[in-house]
Amino acid sequence: MARDTRVYIQIPPYFQKIMDESPIFAPIKKLGNRVVFPYTPQITTSTSANYQPNQLTHTNYQYQAYSSSTPGPIQLSAQFVSQSVEEARYTFAVIHFFRSVTKMRFGTADLFRGAPPPILYFTAYGDLMFKKVPIVVGTFTFSLEQAIDYIEIEFPASNGATEGAYIQKVPVSTQVFVDLLPQYLPGKTVREWNIQDFVNGNLIGRGFI
Image (cartoon, rainbow, N blue to C red):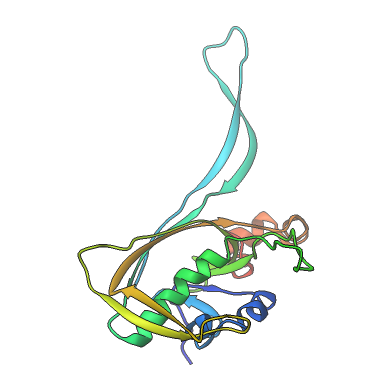
């Protein structure tokens, strides 16, 4: 069986349980609890080595003292096209998903109030570019254009809702922009990272970039 080399975001099991109560997320569950980008997105990212200048006297040159290295944000620009009710439901599920994963746990009824938004896992284009990179969503932006058609869809209401069903219009085409911020656990980097394994490509499958 061929490996899936599409661009997608994997949702961790504990957040899947939260999503299970919402019928809005049914299209995402069908894809294995993943947000799969249906069209090839534009991906922009960077990596940087950070240096601090040493201001020495009586010299013609400045010397750089290494401080740290940082993987930059992974910026995605992606198009979602909705030519059927099913596609429109998926588009809205993705929009609602990104709104949800930029929220913390909050409120007196939540036993886990104060917990931050979930860590997700980003994969794109195979084994050596991005594979299960732990990320959090920093910014999510989408457009609702005025000069295009909209499709009306319906979702069954979730438990506790006063409405019998949710009615929603979705544009036939929309552009989304997402900033993904790499989020590594300190203990994992100390235990697993070394330069030789990274150069050999052995750490890419563990999410290091």
